[in-house]
Amino acid sequence: MTVPRVAVTVDLVVLTVREQRLCALVWRRDRPPYAGCWSLPGGFIQLDEDLPVAASRLMAERAGLRDVRIHLEQLATYGYPDRDPRQRVVSVAYLGLAPDLPASSRAQVLWRAVDDLVEREEAAFDHRRILRDGIERARAKLEYTSLAAAFCPPEFTVAELRRVYEIVWGTSLDPRNFHRKVTGADRFLIPTGRTTTRDGGRPARLYRRGDAEQLRPPMLRPRT
Image (tube, rainbow, N blue to C red; front, side, top):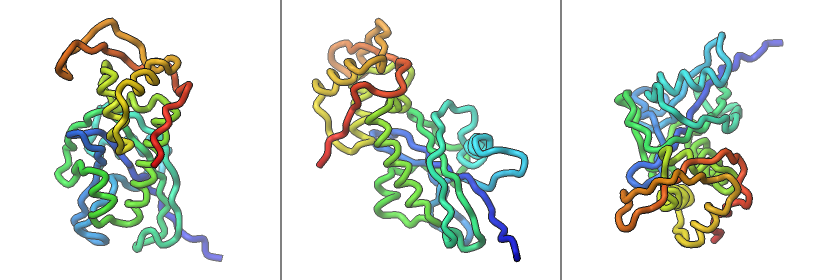
């Protein structure tokens, strides 16, 4: 019996908010297969590294985001036989989230709005599906965890946090109702005692992320 050879890769769904849009970092392929299409940054794991180490290495080498503070978690594993035309490849996808991430140092790596990537542009391999799964994971986690603060700077206003929810969820939220919910969630926001006028208008209170991992009560997104 011949034992099939299976390669293992790590693919990165890196999301941030840029210019008031939810954006993903993508690699524009310049060679077959799928030349000219976008793909997620990623690569093959090395024999002497485990998956989290590989994800961190590829974040620096392929995504061009070296020494950047980022929330990184395993998303899912993709292993159906025909996902790569070259050989049998199993991919372990990771989801990365951070506020206002810089441009990549790699010329082929670009920030693109997720709506354009999902709806209009041609994707390599099964990366459109992986991106969709990453977006849905981010949207769902905003409901039950404090992950929305990962898109914010260390100190932020409630209005800035609300804009994160609106951009990620793709819907408008009532400001007063939102303020009541997030400030009432147990250990979600910690007042800093400082204010800012960077939003314009009257000074707004600055908060930092509390130590809560789960939101109680949850922030359920509007259902249409």
